[in-house]
Structure formats: C-alpha cells, structure tokens
Amino acid sequence: MMKSNKVFIIAEAGVNHNGSIAIAKKLIDVATSSGADAVKFQTFKAVNVVSKIAPKAEYQNITTSPSESQFDMIQKLELDANTHKELIAYCIKKGIAFLSTPFDHDSIDLLYQLGLKIFKIPSGEITNLPYLRYIGKLNKKIILSTGMSSLKEVGNALDILIQSGTSKKNISVLHANTMYPTPMEDVNLRAMKTIADFYKVKFGYSDHTLGIEVDIAAVAMGASIIEKHFTLDKLMDGPDHKASLEPDELKAMVTAIRNIEKALGDGIKKPTISETPNINIARKSIVASCVIKKGEIFSERNLAVKRPGNGLSPMKWDKVIGSKASKNYQLDELIES
Image (cartoon, rainbow, N blue to C red):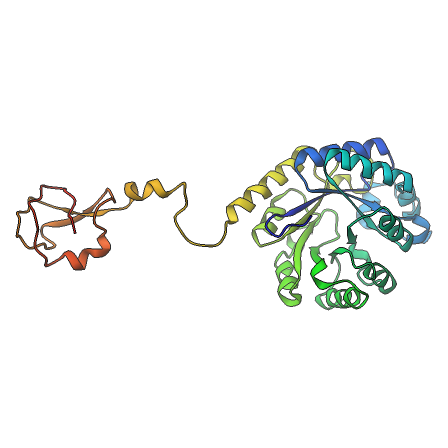
C-alpha cells in the first residue's frame, strides 16, 4: 500500500464526522475524489482514554464550548464497532483505504479484528509504554507520529516497538506538531530529516498548519507519507474543523503532491524528452565568420560560434583552430570536422 516511489497521502477525517455516519461517508467521498490513498478516522472509548477531570487543549476551548469537559467532548465523537464495519465496507466500495488511529487497547483489538493492515500511533501515545508494547506485538505496518517529542523519545518508542515484535522495516515515522493550527515558525520541517537520518527509518509528515505549502515542501524534502486533516466545512461545530482543509483545498494539495512526485524525477542529470528538440535550437556551432577558401587556416579571425547547434560543437574549438579548411565556406556556413 505504501509504495516507495509514490507518496502515501492520508486524508485525516479524524473526528470531523461529529458522530454522524452520514457525515463520515461524505468525508470518505471527498477523500476519494481528492485522489488521496487513504481516509483515516480515530478509534477510542472515552472512558479508557480520558479522565473526567482532564482539561481540554487551549485550541479546543476556542473551537468547542469552554464549559464542556474533554471527556464529554470526545465521548460524543466515538464510533462503535458496527459503524467501523459500515465505514470500512463503504471505503472498499469507493476504492480508498480505511485507516483509523486507536487510542486504547480495546480499540487496538477492534481494528486488529477488523483486519487493518496499518496501525497509526498518535503523538500522545509515544510515551505510553504499555500501549506501544501492545501494538508492537502485532507486527503490523506502523505509522508513528512524533508531536511534542524529543529525538530521544522517538528512539525510545522505536526501540519498544521493535523489541515487542515489529520489524523496523514496517515502521514509518512522521514528524508532527500537535498545535491546531501549527504556527509556521514551529513547524521545524528540517527535524523530519533529522529523524530519518538519525534512525534510518522511512519518514513523512503529519501536518496541522493552515494551507498546503508545508506538505508540498515536505514531499520535496523526501517525505513518503503525508497526513492532513480535512473537513466538509471549516465552520462546522467541533474541535478540529477550523484547522482542517476544505474539499477543494484537499484536492489541490493532492494534485500538487502528485506533481511534485513527477518533478522530483530519478536524480540522473540528462536531457529530458521534452527538451531534446531544443538542443539544436539553443546551442551553437562553429561557423565561418567570413568567406573561407579551401586550404585556408582556421583562426579566431575567420571563425565564430553561432546558432544552430547541429554542427560542430564549440567544445572542439581548440582542435579546429590551426587546421586547414577542406572546402570553401560562405559566411555563417557550418564548419565540418
């Protein structure tokens, strides 16, 4: 599913379904039409994830009612097992991969039972030893987000996953920042390459900035996975809508990434098919700068370099200078070897 020569684009629906299966299906429709490779939701049981006294993030207090607890906020966004099955079936029908991030052991079990081949670990679980061990023993493909973490914490999580039974080749690590939206000065996109170079892992970027330019830059820097939140409408109620792309923006991002994939090429410096016809037009040849008679010695006084480029290359200038003309030449006539 995650091909090395193609960026794996995850359209992150997250909890932007607002607890509605109808909205969830519309999100799948949007992800499919955008050209994304996968649409991702979040799987959790609020009672297993959040205590009733846990505070909300600052941005969540802005995007949801300040009087509502984090527990109440996420409980109404749960998706039950039957809903998961229905959404998976709908994704199969639409031809897009279904992914979901599990936030607790029960959710890991559910996604495993539903046959998911890829497990996404959210940034908040990177220091959760029991969670990492539990998911690591499955030896599935893992995408690990690293928001709020240091390089050492990333390494610790990788060690736990590998020691628990997951092959390193099955792990991809995403650089991330968990602020919604992420300020540009906090993106630190170079850290993505730091992770990749230090731990020799496949890498990508999970983006929470506004707009699409950082995602495009990440692909240009070598990211093989891009994850981006999207919504049907930024004005909808809910914690993440305002920091998500709308459908036309998601499609524009996918199109731009696919174009960058093509533009990156194979790294071999050579004339391309499209520019080959320009060689004879833009390059130059050695020509006669005046009438030259047979037997006359070629010199800087009777030779010049002009277009077109289908004659003797100017790179042979030193070889030609001092030799004799084998024929008569008119002004601007191409010199023959």
